[in-house]
Length: 386
Image (tube, rainbow, N blue to C red; front, side, top):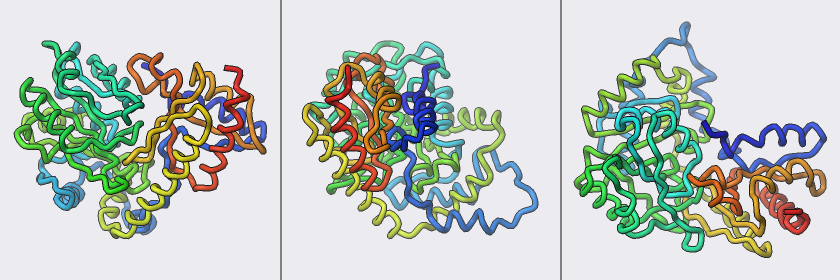
């Protein structure tokens, strides 16, 4: 099981803090945005004598509420085909275990969310990376690139849209290319859409569940973690219109009993979050994105495409080893008592050497901290011995 590139440097960050250095955490997608008041109030005013199990698929009232939410974003599904999970992570793991046999292969455009490697390893399946490159903003390659990777063991494709770690949003043409491959080769299409709400500059999110002709093959992964800034609630969801697949996933869910009761209570209440909440949050993230990405591109030798979704970016730095650089920042460098923690991009590729010069940054902190982080990196890069 590989270590998380997002969390593996935590001991060095803790040591830096013990020395009195203030660490600016750009390594993890933990927003500082307040969770919706309606969700917090549901917990504060909880009137129960027992924190009981829920149904293994999640509370019916919550699933019905989710079905209405999905209808509002153009996804037609009934609550009987929604299964509530312990975060989007469990949804991915259960989906993989239900759809694939040990030794099967899944194609994933890279760089990809680091834990996809871990989930695939736990399920006994092999990740086949499809390279996308920073020079064209990590857009999907042509169909021929997918075709070249398909073998008799290929059983699925996994995409994150909007993307973590790239912030890339796939357009309709790209998604229809995927649809055609999935249909022709009878594959599952896993769509991690947890950043659905976070689209910028007029970009439109198109759900994989809206693609024609692959109703039985799409497995949609969702979560409240980022949408409502409720990462600690640990509530996600798996959606499928495939009745046989749903029953298989439910059996895995029964084995772990139920998703979190308190998390579901907060998440169901969060469905009543006013639209103004998202308007304000998206505007704030866009400002943060512009400040960070423009600041990074103003540093000599740094390349950072402007993401149009989620709240991450990948930057290529004038260095030889991002793991060494990120650790060095925490161990040996500070500016005015501050340093920066980032995630080395080595963990976001199937072959770590591919990401040796790249880092992932999450613009989830206030603008003054992002501005300070850019200043630290501008001073640190010329001083870095590597």
